[in-house]
Length: 51
View (cartoon, rainbow, N blue to C red):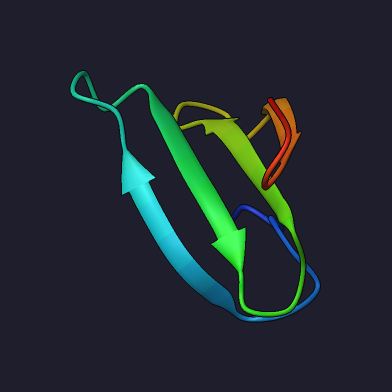
């Protein structure tokens, strides 16, 4: 599966314990995205520092 998560290179990527979701963060931006590991669909998007 190919996930077009961010426009700039990834700074971090992590799977949840079940392997169902992937969290990504880029070097440049302030967005953290959560994707489905099954189909690559973006499930959630967060801005770093937001409560």
